[in-house]
Image (cartoon, rainbow, N blue to C red):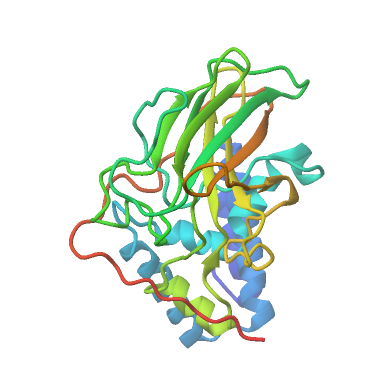
Length: 307
């Protein structure tokens, strides 16, 4: 088609997409083109703004490496990650679910650990935490033999992949549920932390006047053939940033209760939580990172939330 005016552009692109043999690709790309073109019309996107947006997208790619994924960080900061999660779980977003974000810090091949074992693999400051988790199906029956991958940040706000000072795979472990669908492990109580803001994500947050804090949480990824792979996070009930999570991840079903115990030489905490699996296809997601940072430990910056 020879383009006569701006409306012809959309028609021409959509017509060419009809050639695509894959129907799902054709559906997704056609919807993307329609919405993207209408977005440009609605905001009357200028040429300078278009170039600036393209530069941001390019920078997202440049900032993504073996130990950091700026693209996933941006998707979470815009609420897209949570939206996609809810659209695909909890009766397509109509009911509560214990499914949640994968996040940008999951790694494959975390160390297999016996039930009741510790995931502390190098000296890590923090209060002792014992986690007891149970995995059940929609009818409440225990799911035995499920792999449960767990990971969380240190009290200093770093996942081990970000922090050259932590041992490889520190605060990560993979467990197998017993006949009653249970696992348990020992660790330190995680703290809330600021997401990295030295790239495009930080620029967007500053422009919006938002903070960059995530409430304290522990990640879980539960895998067993016959069930849809269940990705989750359990948040600390007393964290001040539950309402304003920079990644929009907190749902009522995932607010965990960290119980303090004073029956030992030092206070310690316990966390009990149950996860409900849906029947479906078991497949692991593509890891957002594949390695560990080296060099100097990064400096964490905390942004203030504007009133």
